Figure 1 (cartoon, protein in one colour):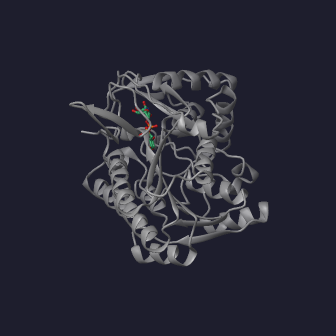
Figure 2: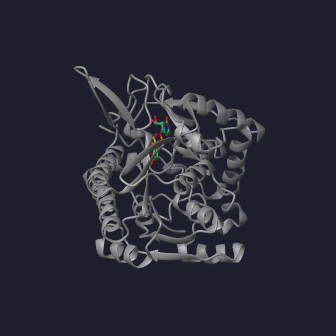
Figure 3: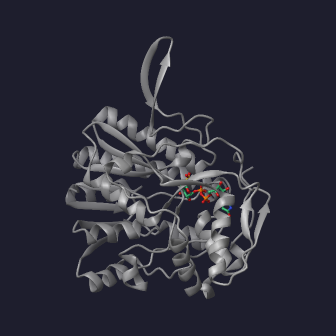
Length: 382
Ligand code: USQ
């Protein structure tokens, strides 16, 4: 099978490229290095060194004897994308080619406009290029659990049956995001749902929670193959940030009461989920939605877990509640369903002390590269 991975340079994109290459797929890795440019502009960088894709592909060839094709180009450029789809005729396309940070999307008008333009135009172009040039290709898009927000009812897996005045119908589960970034993901889902109905596309939308982890089976083969790993306020996700903060003795930045609850997953489970979604595609004319998480925690619970693991490394980890820079509910009901991927065969890898300890080892290895000035600046939502 031939698979195109858009956003191949990212934290999830690169490990996904290696995962599918290792499984024997023909992989085409596409990126325009937008995230490198944005992160440089705001003065933050990955904890792990991240060679350019071409050099990483060479390192992978040496490690595995497998070839990854690299294309540098912008998915928002329709000529570039449609040429690629027309000439390569992929069986599946994975769409990570988006600005992935909620705080970035809330920094100002310039950042909001970039997020909106990039995320929606990339999705529109993919729907069009697949419809025009490879209509049997399965589109797998990374959505986010943040599309649902934190409603006061159970969160279903994508769809909700509504009974109104004695009649019933199925609708997308109500969505109400708390950042512009998350709102673009809602709009992505709406765009794809529209084109699924109109053009009978095959789409899987993966509603993923915050991911954590520094390594996967393939990236562990060689330090050159490590995924990028951000720990700053803008691009770092909370578990990854807390591990790095522990290692550099920076008190863990719990926002507000720390009772905000989300669904989390290990980066290796992200790959397992992508693998299952590709192996078992949806039907023609189906928008299939999975909630891609394996367990839920409050921020406070995560801070406590990280603190305990810090003790194994003789680190006296401090936890500090700071004024929440985001506009989000802190005390809320949270009961999402996530059985779809498990029914397909997903084996959850839970947040064990052992897994967190491996993250500590990576963070310690690159301790000299930690810049404490980027850990917290307090980018306010309002
Ligand atoms: N948080 C803290 N302290 C920190 C950082 C975060 O208390 O230092 C809290 C946040 O306020 C939030 C929770 O931790 O309540 C999660 O924040 P996050 O930064 O780990 O995740 P988020 O901004 O929601 O976004 C991340 C990814 C995004 C993905 C999303 C899944 O960046 O691409 O879509 O996780 S979800 O959160 O389910 O929407």
